[in-house]
Length: 213
Image (tube, rainbow, N blue to C red; front, side, top):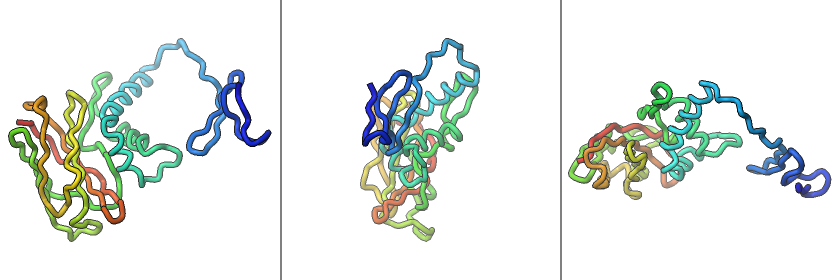
């Protein structure tokens, strides 16, 4: 049974007949109970469903990081995670149904006005990835104490290694330990920056691929 909050003109909550009342992000909704359709999905629906599954598999392990990276983007009533998911669907899915994959250089984990890292170099070492980058801060919106966020993605396991939390732009280098299970596998590295003072973030960028040794 549904209930009406705050009197006759208040919000409707619960189920009444074929309608459901609910509240999300301070907005009240009344919607009909969806009908189960026995119609087969169209080719376009199947393609979109497959793309969505690829995007979710890619982003879900770092949902917290993605929500932070997109938190400043104007999003209406969508969550930061949904904004990021839509970016992947619009820009970073490649292939032909049903064999869709991520087009890594076009994937984004954050968007913002801070300047990103320049001149990133990846050097595989035994059980480790060594990253280096330019420490120049002449660009607008770049500061030596900006925190560097590093994500290393391994496609077969669909999992990530997250870089050390205290690496700063001015350090110029970072070492990221790799799981033994990843030896011989190709990983993809993404970097971005965050300002400690203002909380601003940079656009993430694709630093490249490397084989773990």
